[in-house]
Length: 285
Image (cartoon, rainbow, N blue to C red; front, side, top):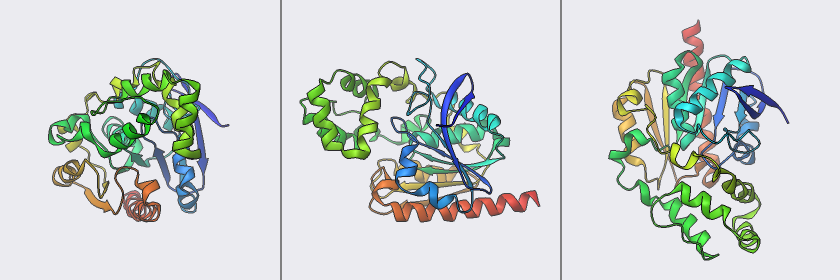
């Protein structure tokens, strides 16, 4: 299991392929397996050098008690990028991973050649997303936990989710594992570990990534948002305020496009990667 020390943290990572650098950034509560499960890594590795890693506190990476804001994780990326000797990379980030990618584009512009977002919510744009706390994926999650008589509440609350998972009895955990299936079991087992950290609060803080900072991103951005996303206002805002932003809607998905519509998501990522990599090579030339 490859590991690298970066920003004082031990990170689990994987790397495949040759070519321009692409780094995949997963969502909070997820891990790098999501990219491998959908076959995206294998597809992209035919044209790119693909690096994916578990965020701090996630998967097989080290779990410090604090430091889970997008600013902290952008610093993790910067250090990991240096440790692995990567060239300027195109970042592909799902949900919070996209926030980390945009923060890195601001704080380490020399290391980021472009950013592809997948259904990302930005705490700094909270005011334009009044329905954030009632996102449909939270409703699905609430229904799942209600099957073992656990109420997560109507409004998104990561701390409550993590602590509720930590308090599950063995029989409750077994029931939920059966409901979420093989792919979801790793995700479920990770939640209690995050209860020991500040992650639940940190990921919903602005952490300096204000609307003004987001609008200041000068690298090319592709904003891929799901057809039934609660964050479509963010998609429109990014298109209107970023100098180099293309937007695209992934049909039939509501927050997990890479799983809910894998072919369309993979096709969109490939197209935008080729566009950005081509522009990068032109700039170099």
